[in-house]
Length: 333
View (tube, rainbow, N blue to C red):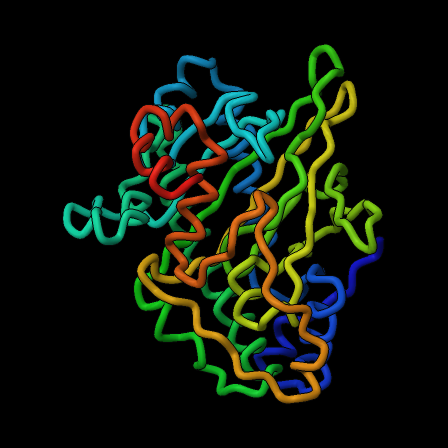
């Protein structure tokens, strides 16, 4: 599948044609390439370099920041540790979020606050921390500019969503998909929707494996130089009553002798925030598909933190069992 290319520069400049294309593309497909995003190529290369340096470390050094030792769902996940749709994903990864102190109040009333906390950093790579923090800041800015363009495309003021991003909860991964030693892994990552607002994915140029589902069929998405792949998350689909579409996607296992590296970034608002519904013009509302369910069959919540928390509880059973088993039982995750 050849995805459309949308220019962030044109969106920010208020180009009406490009803003209309953004709405139409994400109504029909939910995926596109983003150009003119302002993220330096040198920084992109440095991010992949530090990712490869980390994944090449001895296992003991990687386990220093083990995901299973972190109640906030941060750190390194070994191969096969994460699940999608109850099946093992064949990748290793580091998960990071906003690097903040953990919440100590309101955890009963707002259980999703367990997701906020400090990031664990590998002592072997001191340069990782400033790189990750810079990346998250830059990608947050890109994501918010996109969200403002979506607001305009749907007939709202550009700042329609701004209030719920005064204390956002950005998330990101450094992901490595090695080829399975026995060639028997069923999935790099299983079919899923993303739980947040939108995803900015930077795959290493030339890497394969990403597939997008459309009309019941799976299509390959090529990794092109200096282009991010953007897709709609469940919160934005819910906010438009299904007018904008969160499209299922997956990653196939890497073929023998190859490896895939990618850096996904997930724009997510304040954990406590209710993502506002967008009043659609009649002609757009007539094309809205209605609010569906996530791929686990559960209702999509408009509370950002609840939607994100359920996804984390399901995807990481070891960490959930160690720290949040009662919470998972209460939420039915």
